[in-house]
Amino acid sequence: MVRAGLVVLLVTLPAVLLPGGTNDGRQVVALVSIFAALFTIVEYSAASPSLVEFRDAPPFNRVRFCALFATVFSLSIILRGYDAPSALTGFFHSSVSQVGATTDFPFSPVRMMVNMMPDGTSAQVIETLRNAAGLAYVISILSLIWFVVLLRLQHWPRRGGAFNVWINLPTFDPTTGGDVVRRLTRDGRINIILGLLLPFLVPLIVRAAVGFGTPIRLDDPQTLIWTVAAWAFLPASIVMRGIALSRVAHMIRIQRKKAQEKAAANGMIAA
Image 1 (cartoon, rainbow, N blue to C red):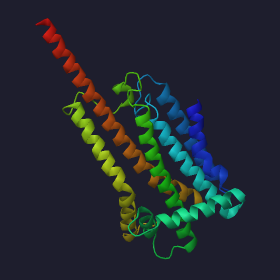
Image 2: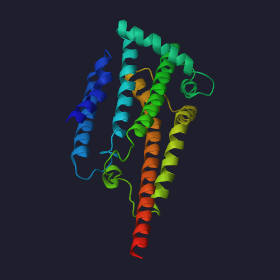
Image 3: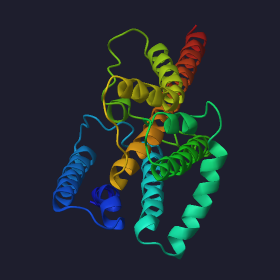
Image 4: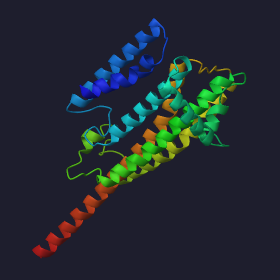
């Protein structure tokens, strides 16, 4: 129930913090939050999960949730300052403006996010997008560093106990596709490479879609928040998954080696 409550808080955060909004928008947010809460309860209470990976192997999902929550909360506070300024929003805005300016350099993901906007976009939207993208990207990088440090400090995935592949990797079938270690290592590398490239590829894809006549509008604060949060969070989450899969493969490789050494030792004793 605590997890479900935190998920509801995350989903409703922009609608709660941002002034204004329509009744239809609030109803959509309420429906999404209810669905997300029910999904969380079912996944974490079921004996056999269906989608959520590393359910019983913290801190994987905890770091991801904290990173997304920090991103959504910070962006909501910043955009709230445009309509309801306060000392807190002013502090956030001044700090984030420096972050946006620092991360907006040629060929950076932030610059590419700004360049994906069509011609004629207002200067305020461009500035807001740059600041939001810069902050979200920095949070994603910090979350990756935090994740790697925690894995090393906690000796993840073992952490002194058994690691259940069936529970923590419900979509992974170890009986098909060849050697498990080779598959996990390959999938881990693919996830890491894809996660590192996505912040650059997504703006290019969106820009190409705009060129074919697909409109993109980030005038609505909630749309901007969730767009930028997804752009920064999903690639970081994919990189985390790749790192986690690589460490699971390393754990299985070590266990195999120990089992082979033990079997060899027992064979020598028997002989």
